[in-house]
Image (cartoon, rainbow, N blue to C red; front, top):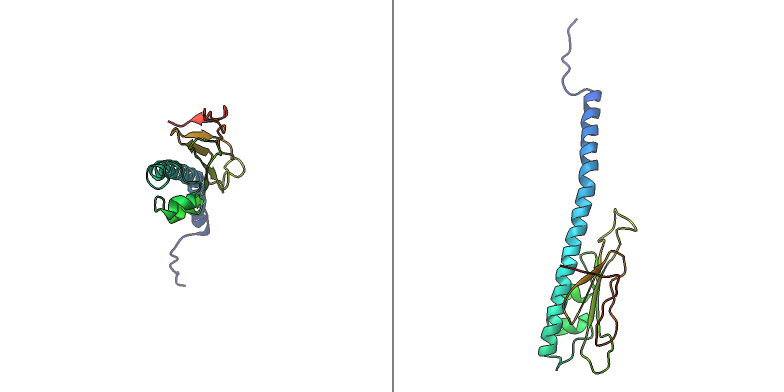
Length: 165
């Protein structure tokens, strides 16, 4: 009788390797998703700052003292990119509008996550909503709804909002 050489991995060894890979994946995937949400939030903040500076540029150049009423108007004079002008970028929905204060040049800009983390931590695109107006400081809420501001010349932000450093 001749002995056949048996080479390779046994079933138990393969199962152990698969289990180790599963444990590593269980640790890494939540961190990866959290990193993606943080990147989306950073992009949203940067985009709002771009909208703010574009509004100031528009007011000083094309707007004759008035701010642009929409993202499409800012895109029309090439102050923001075409992706941001659609209102959706990096998992956030953006909006810019004139708050309608009589005899006062003003604008409101918001960024809200497309899918809020508290609703689904796996598919959530962000955990904070952001707001900026002509005054300049950026505010955030930890809800799916962006902070708001009173439509008066005082421009008081809602008490539920937190100033972003």
